[in-house]
Image: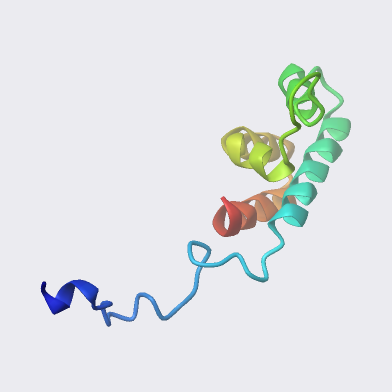
Amino acid sequence: MEESNNRVADCGCRKQSDRYTSFDGIDCDLNARRVMACIERNMVASAGDQPFWKYFMGKRTPRSGPAPDDLFLVHSHINQIREFFEECGDTAALELLAQVEEECC
């Protein structure tokens, strides 16, 4: 058996922790709840007919089966959420969404 198969590359790539190694210290659930609050706030502010967003928010409390967590919903619909925040001109929400995408999705 070759000894090289058990060696770890010393390239420096494993020396810096990132989201793929550890979520330690990142409150992804809180940040996802904050994104959901931004969606709710923008739904109220836009006061238009928004069938998709009503459907989306309804997914939080389904009629049957387990309710998905907010992070799952954000991750599953990140492009629609980004487009909605862009349409609403909500730069703070866009920044938060980018952070959640980078750190947690």
